[in-house]
Image (cartoon, helix red, strand yellow):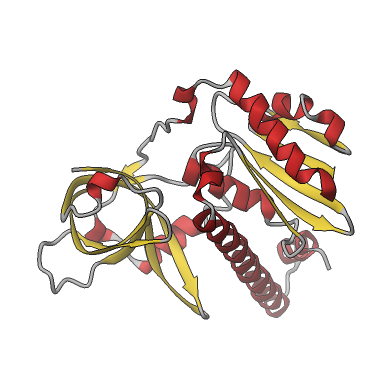
Length: 274
């Protein structure tokens, strides 16, 4: 049964027992979707760690036969937020790719796809998001062409993110209940931006480089080294900040870090101020 049918049935039913069963089923499906998302994102980040030059292109295009087409749009949106450039993820089945594109302000992804229309079976969408179908053997040349098209119309300044802070949230105020509430606002995308928080006077208790230039940290609002703190990850970290032990401010998103059936709070740091 389609997930939307279960949700509709849940809203219609007057039987508490049946409503509970359907709610549990939807919760299970949601958990499976989140695990799919994390798996796809981990796959892409591993490819970027292996070849960091891919992250320096004007756009990102990745494909796999192992990805479910139902989650590629959500992960493309996450990738766009991480690297602040258009991202297209493609699920390939039987020689045909079905993809979702997400863009950033200043780059009309539908217009860019129009310039590559001869390589596609079809596409549609709007300036910030689109869907497409493409023969599997055209994916690599399509990426090269799209990279050229975007480079011709986008200035370097377009790729510099402008961070809008939604709320000041000190690290000591973060709880699992709060993160559950934030997560319930998703899935996040073009029309539903992920909340960005700011924290002040953040202490770095541990720090190490993982992958190619990513920084894994344990942060807290206290200088006490015995403070448990929260784990954080910053992709493409500023080399000058690698050994800093305190930030005056950080901008970050909240997320669950899921690994081996366990989950813990993680901060996705987008910017720091020393």
